[in-house]
Amino acid sequence: MKCPTTDKLSQFVDELLVGQELIDIKSHTETCKECQLIIEAFRHEQQFLKETLQTPTLPDDFASLVLEQVEPYKQKSIRLKKAPWKKMLFSAAGVVLAIGVSTSLNPAFAKWIDGLFSSSQVDEGLRVANEAGFVKRLNQEVTDKGLTFKIEDVMADSSRIALSYQILSETGKVKNPYFELGHPQNSITVFDDGGKKLELNNMSWGNQHEYGLIEFSLRDIPTPEQLMVKIQLGELDGRDGNWQLDVPINLKESLQATTTVPLKGKQISFQGVSVNMKEIRFAPSTTEIIYETALTDEAKAELIPKISQLEEQYGKNSLANFGTDIQYHIENEEGKAILHHNTFFNGKGHPSDSGTLQGSGEDIPEDIGHVLWNQSFIPKKDKEKLSFVLDGIFKTEPSDFFIKIKPKELKKHPISFEYEGNFVTIKKAEKDSEFSLRKSLIPIEKKTIFKIEMEGGKEALSSALGVWTLVDQTGKTYETFHSGSILDEKDENGRFKTTTELMTYGLDEVPDELTLKLLSVTRYHELKDKWKVPLY
Image (cartoon, rainbow, N blue to C red):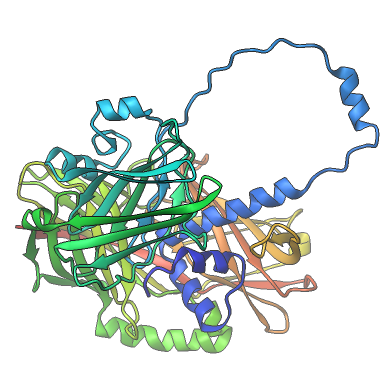
């Protein structure tokens, strides 16, 4: 499935989803790194509000006690430091709208460097497009209620549209650029050259600084030569008003500068996973490579009966997304890697990327393990010849591992186990409480949960433990929700430190014994004889 919208992910965190929608989103977020980041941000927000609202009870004489300690003081002149630019861009259904952003630049400095897109505060792809002349100065603005909303620059190509903007006071002072896109009076829509509204899933992110960035991803949709971005804001900087702008976008020049190299027929199968190259697209601000991964017929024939057995034993809700992924790098004519995807770098306990801008994967319905990938990376200024090099594959498969625990004895007698390079100690298993905001600050609902805490270490190329389920002494199963971390720090055994927390609901009484069953595991298989595909 495509990435859910942020509203759906927020509902997922607040446990407002039910039925098949809950199952689909839970399955998707087990393997989608971008959605996991969004979910983590929502959960941090929940925790912050929970802690903030837990106001301590003060003694009746608190005010008098404080006043007794107060002494006259001198005012001091304090120079506030501005925080550095912080931008987050997530892939949602392959199309992204990122709003809000931030910068430590003041207006005079931004003008001196010729706008936001020439600064180090945006990604390198936008800077490359700016240097090549694909950023256009617009200076479109609208004023109401003493506030001006101003679109300064635009960069548009076949991969994305990026608009820099500011919010200005009557005196020209730069205001906080953040605005709430989820506000019922605020909307941003895009229309093609025929006046048809493009259905773009979106998300927003903001910070309290002077510039904002509106960014649309045009990946996976046909790109016309003309687009119209309609901005309608009814609330800005805490004021109600009417700020409307129609921003015409001309992509003709950038489309002429975009080249596509078909890669059809380039295919390989390894360890039950097939990789099918589709095309590579060279645009002014990004280079996009599109490919598919899927299970071979033999692998599917082996996997499907195992999944059916797991569904029968533990229920469909407990199952993971049995997907496929790859590790690769892109190199130039000299054999130097300019991009890495899912690479195990030295000093890292998990696969990571280098040189990439963003990526998305869309599950193909009714075909287990079949994913259409679109990965974008920083374009090269010189037109050098590049090659795609496949380094390995990742495959999520059913696991047969389980371990029995006695929750009441774990504090005194923790249980340790090793599984495929993961060395784990179960430290605690007990009832706890959590708070659900339910989209409002008051009331906060308190819920009882059962929580299992684990920590340990993993070897660099070890398997990634996936979905767990709990089984009590009567055979009843309990779905678990997983969170955790893999640190770059190593333990005394030279393994990367890990933490894992499993939560489940509905376990009213803690039984004497529970079985912790691992339903899925993602295994990495290195390709010894690297598969190389020319991208020219």
